[in-house]
Image 1 (tube, rainbow, N blue to C red):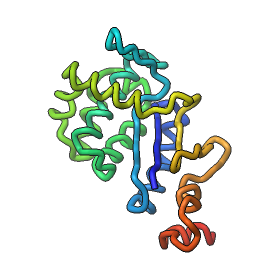
Image 2: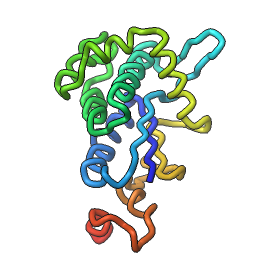
Image 3: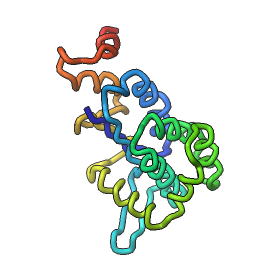
Length: 185
């Protein structure tokens, strides 16, 4: 079971992370692989090795901090998701002011800030991570957060529940116990 989330710090993405993703991961996280791809609606130019983000350089920088946390902690959502949630709880203007919010969230969630900052500031490493995020973001993404369960788009904006989508992706006789409780309600 693979859950792919392509967020950004838009109000919708922040709400999705803080309400839907956090609670779903808390109850069902052991039953799916989370692929969290901080890239949003960015455009990458491989020739000039640049990324242009929909909401400017601050968004690209924020994506890079999150990409670094994910890479450093070897895609361990137990480590990087609290960091992403902390960042989602910050107002966008605070995230745009520089590194302090990123540092604060790293310290709050017990992540190695100097290592994350070093990764972010290393042009070669951050470029490699940006390329990877671009490659892992479907070309047909039209809005964020973009959410897929096993390749099927979950339209969170239309009220589709992430936990229900994950549970329904399992055959009925193989649904994890938390699904049986959730779907019975």
